[in-house]
Length: 115
Image (cartoon, rainbow, N blue to C red; front, side, top):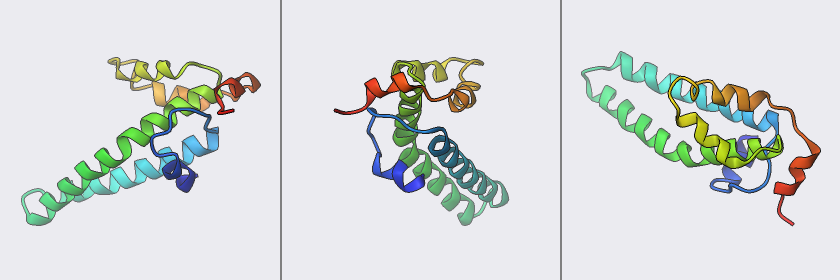
């Protein structure tokens, strides 16, 4: 699932299964948690600054493919990819990645596949 995620780096068309979505979300959460722990442990040292730089790089590298994965997950559930913009809303947006992950796949989502 992770290699498929990076092969489809910025592809907003097509579909993504629930398993692909959740495995990538798990990997992203584990990696970000480890980096944040490193930042917290090395607050005033050079190592702490290194962790901050790596964390910023991590966010920049994973932002676009994570957004594309969310759009493809919505396509699999037969929703428009524009619904991913709901994630930027305060309060509601924090629940959207969880809700998008639990949406069932629908056969009508094939209309978003490449022909």
